[in-house]
Every structure is written in structure tokens, then in C-alpha cells.
Length: 409
Image: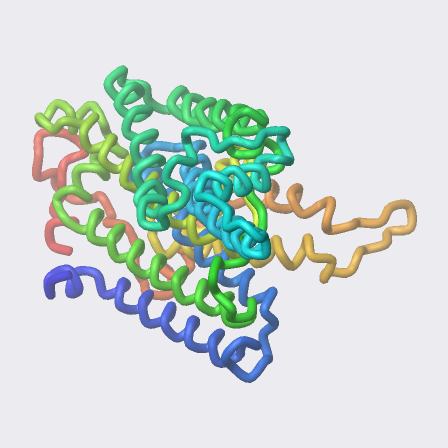
């Protein structure tokens, strides 16, 4: 990042400083390497929250800045988790199988080892053979490449088909939701090659690592914080230059941007594919901390929640997306974890585990109606930042042209 970028985006340095202090503080207070104030389970919750903040940044880039309300980005998030989960399950099972067969009088052949691994992994769905999509599961390097390549390729193909047909607005949102639903329904099948409804489990156990979960949780916290920091800088860089001006123009008036000679479809496809890759990286870090992934994680409702997080935080503001995701995620953990006492009303008892989603929906409606700038708008008030006031003589041929007052600000 050059000096001009930093000078134009001081909020990036503020965000990175806060993120660094947060990570350092959690590390010092953790059970794994610190003084033991914060439990390992909560460290994992914080690490997963950072991953959700990263996909929220991706969602804000594609929706808040480009105007594409994608209801399918959690599909890319889940695919990233599946790609890394395949290696984690394969390698962990391989170590167990090799250790077990080492006791045999005759050393096993490589074919016998692979067959034994396949039986262990796919026995739950009545199979004993590796599907073709597991061809690279033995290689961490190749699976890490697939973490980005598979979701990126899916987004590229889907986006090319949708954008070249000039599908926009609610119709595009429905198409992205349909893509997510179709993918989830396919993965629910036992013959999908990814263990159907059973999903991939035991992902928290890193193969060959003897460190306790207390320490591993800190490693993942660091990795998640690093990914969020890099993702935030990348997104800020994308929206700060000419490219950012064009995608904002597409969001505000796509027809005019096309009339000016810009290839709108190329810009939209680039953002859609880039954000899919960012979402996949977030998923690849999230699910090893969660320990399990199954097709239910990719249900369309998850992508709708993602849009709600960004709206509550304040779309069109990268820090707003982070705030919204962190706020809602941690609040959800608090409400659904049984830590909030029930409220007896005599004739009925409010149990927050059941009513949390209703509260979230009501909050979304209220924010949309009365605070469209979201929580991030509060920071604008605090810093006295506001949109230009459009008054004074017009400096262009129509009512939307730059005006004198804006030109002097």
C-alpha cells in the first residue's frame, strides 16, 4: 500500500490498530498462552466472529458499494470450509489408519491404506471409495488453492451468465438465492461426495499437531485477525481509486455508467468473483474453529442473515459491515447460549432462545426505516461527517450535476 492510499484512508490505520490491540488483548487474557481470564470456547467464538466480519466486508463490497444484493455469498463461504475440511478429514484419518495398520505383521500397501481411509471417511454413507472430487485431498497445498479456485470459478461462471443477460435488482437476488439452495440440496445427498447431511466433522483436530485446543484456538484467532486485516485493506484499496468510483456509479445509476462507455458487466463480474474468494477464505478459517460443516450451513437463510448484519452495521461503510457482523454475532451467542434470563409474564414466558430471531428481524426493519445508515452512521455523527448538501447553482446541464456548494467543500 503506497503513501497516497494510507493518506486517503486514515480509517484503515485506525481499524488495523484496533484489530491488533483486540487480538493482543485476547491473547494475553486467554487460557492457552495468557492468564486464563477468557475461556477457550469464547476464544473460538471470537475467532469465528472475526471470520464473519471478513465475509461481511465482502458482502459490503458487493452490495454496499456495487449495489448487487447477493443472497448467495454464504455458499462461497461454505465451499471454502468444505475444501479445507476435505484435507483435514483425510489427513487426520490417514494418521489414525497408518498407526492402526502399523501393528500388522505384514506392512500395508499404499492401496490398502487409501482403501482403509476411504472406508473410515465414507462408511457413514455406505461407501468405501473416494469420489473424484477428493482427488487432491491428500495435499494441503492443492486444497488451499481449491479454497479460492472452486468458489471463485463458480462465482465467475454464475456471474458471467447473470450479468451478460443484464439481470439486476430483485431478480438477481432471487437467482443468487436459488444457486445457494440448489447447491445445499445437492450436498444433502449422500452421493454428493461430501458425506451428505453428515458433513465433515472433527475439523478442530489439526493433523500432526500435538498442541492443546487452548493453544490451537489462539493460532486460529491470529490467522482470522490477519485475514480480516488483509481483507479490509484489499477492500479499502478497491473502493478508494477509480475502480471504486466506477462501482459506486454502477450502484447509483448503472445506465449512466454504461452510457459513459464503461463495461458495467466486467466491473460487476470482477467484484462478484473477488468477494466470493474473500468469503471462501473466511469459511476456510471459520469451520476448523467450529469443528464441523454440513449443507445446512449453506442454507439461503444464512446469506439473508449476512445482508441483515451489513444493513444493521451500515452498508457502504467497510467498518460498518465489521461492526454489524461482530455486534449481531456476539449478541446472538449471548441470547442463544442461555445466558440471558427468561422473562416470565404470568400467562407466557419469553425465552430468548426462541425469540432471538424475531428480535433480530424487528431490529432490521427498524434500522431500515429509521436509521438507514446503521450503526456506522453513529460514527459519522461523532466525526461530524455528512453527505454534501446539494444546493447552489448547478455546474452541469442537469439537476444531478455538481453544484457550487459541493465544489467548495
